[in-house]
Length: 482
Image (cartoon, rainbow, N blue to C red; front, side, top):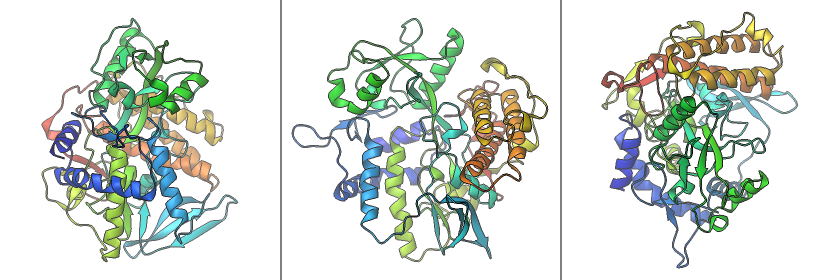
């Protein structure tokens, strides 16, 4: 576990909370065995032992997989089956609109049903586990529902949110018109697949942390004027046996991994920040808890180590339940919560008002020009159509707040967010418009933090501030005062 701790701290670029990482690596093996006991089936070798793979940023093979690259789906299958065996009421199709805050604590959630009926679901405790916000960007490995809903609800309730500028981009998403950006697992590179540029040249260490690889790819794509690079997996043995899900996707797209180089581009993959919590998942608002990608526990810092996300969910979700059963009702100064309550060696720094209400201008730098925003963009780009507004938001976030950023590109992105936000006012109360509003709110927080962090660190790269600045070894906090 000490090596896992060291690898995680190295990837996090100085912003991991060491205590949080220690909890992750110490409790992780037990939680994996609990998943197996629930029925999750992981790949094993001929001797019946768990097959361990090495992924980016790891110093050794320690990652378990299911079906080669279908690990998340297998974990979900096992957990859904387990939930169905309990007395839990699952309200499928309901969309959470906002937190109910009463007398200084979270008292439930306001939600809308598919038929448009709004309900107040009252509860003494609310656990938010709504995932990330990959849909902020045009190119993402995330599902369509990953619109930052939990983080946005927390922001609107004034709950501290931190580290949202650190959106991790996965280096290897398939860039092919027949497939909507399926993830080409890190395990491919762990088994020897190579990254190649337009000219077939090998240009980066495949198993470097994801921020390093994505940054190198983005720079090479700009340099060569291309929209994708290549993953060469032709040397991998037993590809179909090891990676059946990926093999099927590739063949559906007309690609043969045995003979074809695979077109790839970086894709928004993981929001390393979120609702600030202590080591038990408690937020600064009594009654509100968070876990998984929605939370900022301090585990990931400025860049998540490959596969630590599933592990974080498996480790910290049970800690929430154990704390609730023990009667806990508020946060302790542990984990990322120390940036709010004080203590620890990574302080919090309060962010200014949302960037969309205070547009910053500046040079775009080498990331390329971002076209000026036309007047009346709120009505002009979508004509009141939430799908078109969402497309434009994603396009401009990708251009201005993606792998490479600058003051100028971020300022122009903030202006688009402001215009799209105006277009959501007075809109219908349904999931489509609410998701768009959530994207605006989380996008605002991301751009504001990215503008304020005048350095490059982990998954955040400013072309106008290319160096890491020790003065920014802190968490930038939106919401209540840090």
